[in-house]
Image (cartoon, rainbow, N blue to C red):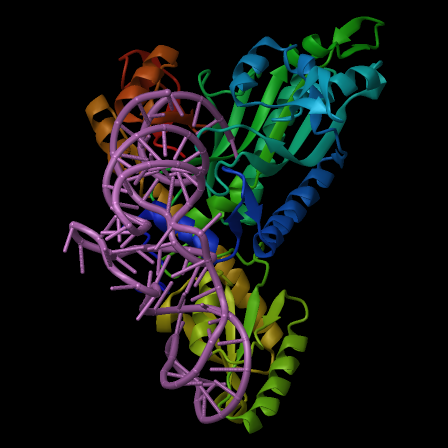
Length: 477
RNA sequence: CGGGGUGUAGCGCAGUUGGCCAGCGCGCUGCGUUUGGGACGCAGAAGUCGGCGGUUCAAGUCCGCCCACCCCGACCA
């Protein structure tokens, strides 16, 4: 086996994914089982994701804050469904300072309880509302089986927590943030997603309603890539978040929460990656452009490097990496940066300098097709155009792939056939938790979300009942 | 927790019916030649063979116990 080659995506998707994460130096396994080390290259990608999301949060009036990682166990038990949902996956601290604690502390799996506790102190009047806070944090969930980025014991995310005076406002907030996520996914990550409501079975523990953005990976499995929850007054009642309204009436607040995690990096990898490695969308890529200098003899080196520096300076508006590593052949560097998913590569050698041109190689179009000679003059504008085009092309390709793997199914047989290995099934669906579980057992497919674009009425593919709702079923990560 | 598997150099692995110096590829270090699609030569460094115990003249190899990790299920952003 040639160790330099990645496993083929088509032949072994899991192995391909795993090797890709490790060898592109996004992340590594940690000494503790199920944990992950995010390496600098992976973290740089995450920081770009953070930046893009933070901009959107600011635009919608949210501010950042930080809450404790350790939560008294009793907080977790206040909301009945919440504790039932999370109890099996909690890490618990029983000792501190060498002594057994009177009350164990839970390492936060999510922060509704601690934030709810604080909101009950902060909120007295309708004038205090809405409270629109986000926190960037790490959380711990003791999962049985883990996978780099997709499901690790500890993961990084942002969690927004808001409190509102009315149900309508909270519902609006839940839906707004779902759309913020969908917009981010499409326009920054070039990941086309379907934003829709989750079924009762799949909703967040303690929520009245859960919405998610669902993305289709390269093996046609679905990945829940972000969630937004309408919590109703459940947490307000459990944590006593009350306020006096304009009529001097005591009311429970209406709350929401929403989050996107490092799992999204997995979504980017599995949406765009190919047999050569990662393909990163220009807007989020740690390096948008890599320049590989090519020279045969030492006397050529200075001349080439000087040109390279000139071009790099002209591309100051972009995130540019000059690969000046010594002793590596250009071929090695090409493969290395392709593995790491850099959207655009520039090659500059003696031949190019003579012609005052350079080679541009697009990561989204493999092989010779993606290469072209361009004049060095006006490099900035050319690069800007091509990066835009790559960004658009990635979204277009991913959308085409997704749409060609969604099938409208009318019968259970048809649906089983589709979710077995063809893609997602879109069906008329009369909501029924028991039926949903049966389908999961028989096909391994779950209800990903209700179709937000469903119109009219039809016959449920499973129960035969009349319904006005459509749903997506798929195998999922 | 149920089923299956693997532990030998940083990584990936080979090691026969027990046998004397524990090997190969990649990577790493040094020197030289190279550099337009994963360079080559020479010289090197690097191992409690997962742990403990047993059988034996002799254990990476056989036996027992333990530990760790991986894959498939149940759980999940």
